[in-house]
Length: 488
Image (cartoon, rainbow, N blue to C red; front, side):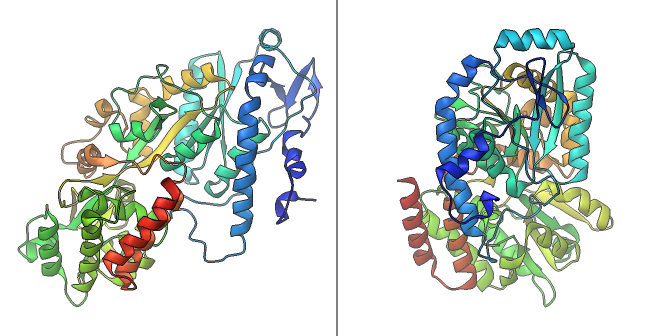
């Protein structure tokens, strides 16, 4: 029976995940079924240390799996942000573990010396884009060729399954050594107790504050930023010139410019406004620009942000259809000439340069209310505690070198999270350069384990004012009530 297909299950059901047997044993070592190589088990000391972690992770897995099952009955689930989710044949990571054959650290070392094999380091990631996978694989190959102590391999786990597989893997004590995950999810995994505290073990002093904050919980560092992106304002330079407009820097200037650019066939501004995390990603820069926070929206600042977005629609300079447009849809409207300005990210640049080589566009900071603001996107590396921590850190030291970072960021369309690299990553006239400047004002979502629920409240409030189903004051009050029930 597939217990994950049942809508009700017990603790006994979930114990199935903890006691799956290994394929077999050779010379006293468990065999890894995916590689046919001896699997270097954690030592007894680590096993004892992991007991508390497994109990916490098991409870988390029960709650998360129950939530996933409950969501299966609705076809209107908004899901994860567009362009980050995917499906694949390797949707689940194989979980294999047996408590029957413990080995000590000395046994592991002796076995490694006997076989002459490098210690394994495994990575899980969720990128479905082939170019991203190829780029990571190239860095892994380069690293493996550069030394003989460790051998790194990587596994693709679809975004939609990533949380479930880490939760189940934690319960079964079968986890990778490194996970590459979406930055707003970092805090929820820290709460599961599966990440190594890297405070003092990895230098992030040159990284953007926002990227470091995304993997810091209670003053402790639980990850290393992989790369960063944020949002900025794209504009059609020909349209601005024809309308006699300057590049807007404030909300008032943005409204005036959008009005001047709006015609029967062109709307002045577009931003993704779907009611999910992707919408929240596009809304929060406007919220934060007023001085409001993600957790205090029912005040003058929060209401002002909601009112401004509503006024863009009421004045006819932004289409209500934005509630149905992903960031990719907004880009398509822009390159088709239907939108004069858009809020979007640097990952769109390669597509725009390829599909609209003759379009004359530029990028600038998102216009401000009280202060400039943007939202941090991107991924973080996390090291799993109890795994091959030394090997993981050795690989991260290599992968975060300037040469490798520039290679990865170029292939991903990202900006280095290391300021010293980012400042020299692009030419002065590069369209990416404004995003580098924007990163100085970018903040992370969270970090909070319950961020998805807070995000839902924020995106609902903005969706309500865009569609006209609620006044800004009412939408702010409703969102605040929901948020207070989550974080207080």
